[in-house]
Length: 189
Image 1 (cartoon, rainbow, N blue to C red):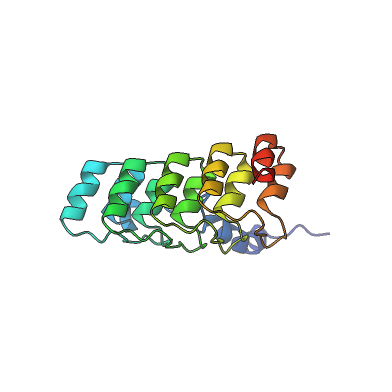
Image 2: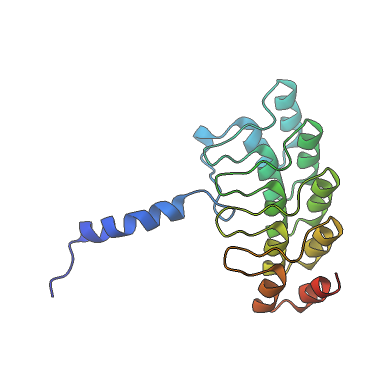
């Protein structure tokens, strides 16, 4: 059998490469050239720069090419003070990126429990599902074994019975990934 031409292999892999290069909670866009300054400041947790940009009337919900907002970047990186300032400026709590991820999901997936509490106290919806796998903030936290975040989400009204697109719940993900503390929290709710 003749070996495939290298170009034909590349063309077969191109769709998968494009998917991997796309926007997701795991691999956010960071290209400085198309990223608004407020998003860059929020990602760095630079509250002085955030204040300056907001004072100059930069849009609090500016977007990058993946539809990330400054609040999403602050949540992803656990910058509670930056997130608080953006919320006080009117940032949309439940805005979504190209994959349907919210700031709450990003904070939950990275175990930023203090930031979760702030978002929940301001009215973020804990039961939204992202559009790639159907995961909620609770599923993210349970799947990764983030007990403190699971507790914060449960206290904030997260529903434990929501199933993702594969029919899994936060409890089943915690079981599959061997997170007994998370299982105890979910079972006692």
